[in-house]
Structures are given as structure tokens and as C-alpha cells.
Image (cartoon, rainbow, N blue to C red; front, top):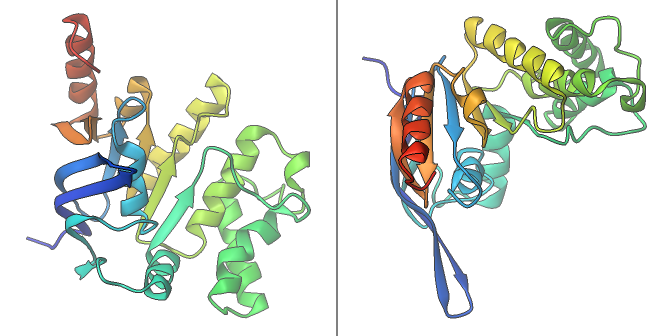
Length: 245
């Protein structure tokens, strides 16, 4: 059996606020294999944002182990974590986070600049990434000349251009209308079918239900890990019974 792409074992994250200790994550354990499409669903305060930060190497566990491609991220220096993020992880955010005064093509090239890749190769790879998300005819447009859905596609192309091991999407449809949101989710499904590993964080059960696998979180713990549709059905049943979401 192949090794997992990432693995969390007993991961906890504590924050100290004055004299109070906040348990943001409590002994979270799960694995993700290469090529999986995982949804993480939970309400505000469930721990999903803290978990996303740890998965993205933006934060490290207070206890437990997080291994990415077999490498334990605890104890890595800030420079080593930054290098790991740059090589292994692509981020897609709710707010797009594009540079307003540069073209779609230049926005997508940016991660390759940090890798020291030569200009001609950067341009070729950025063109390919934009074509892959359906924006071959919008490469020269700036963000203010694009729709919300097109801007999110630029953000996805930027996340993909460095060929990361994992694509992390944080509420990627949160600023989009329902029709455009469905188009972005369809694009994620296409990326998954092409072999990409995706982890999507959402507070919307209807989105988590479309993921082949989902984790439901509450109070810093994983409540259910299974097929997305089943996890959401369990959530709806719990809510109907008056249990916390």
C-alpha cells in the first residue's frame, strides 16, 4: 500500500489568551492519499480554519505529528516551512488575493518568480495554467476587467502553476453567486479527475456533500469521516435531532 501524501496523528493546537487556554484542535488524526478530494465542513469555531493553517504549513501543531510527504513539519524553521509551502502547496482563497495592477498572466506567474524560474519558462507555464482553467482568451486582462468567477479561475491557475502536491481551497465560492460557484466546483471536480489532490474547507453542507470524502468538525474534533453525502446526511440528522452542528 502506498504511503499517504499527508498524515496527522493526534494533532492538537492550543492558544493562550491571558490566563485562558483555547483548545482549537483536539487530537485530530487522519490521512490523505495522493489524488483524493476531501471536504472539511464545520460551523464557525469548529476548528476548520486552524486545521487549514496547519495543513498549509502556516501554523504548526502544539502536540501530535503532521507529516507531509513523510516530513514532520514540527521543528522546521520558518524558512524551511516557507520552502515547503512553495514546493508542495497551492492556495485558493475566498477573496482571490490577486494583484490589481497586473494582468492575469502576470498574477499566475508570481509563484514561479519566487522559485527563480526563467521568464520564458514562467510565461509558458502560466499560459498553460490559464488555458487549463478556461481563460486562454483573458490572459492580458487585469482583475478589475474580469468577473468574480474569472478572478477565482485566475487564482486557481496561480495555485496550480507550480504543480503543487496539494491544492487547498478556503471557502472558494464564498464571494460568488450560486451559478458561478457551481462552475468553480465543477472545475475542482475536473481537476480531481485529472489526478490533483484537493482539500476544500467550507461551512456549507451542500458543498461538502459534493466531495467524494468529507470530514465534519465540531469543537476542534473530527465528528465524522466518510463519503461527503453521508457526512452531510449525518449532519442534517443531528441538526434535526437538536444536536450541535
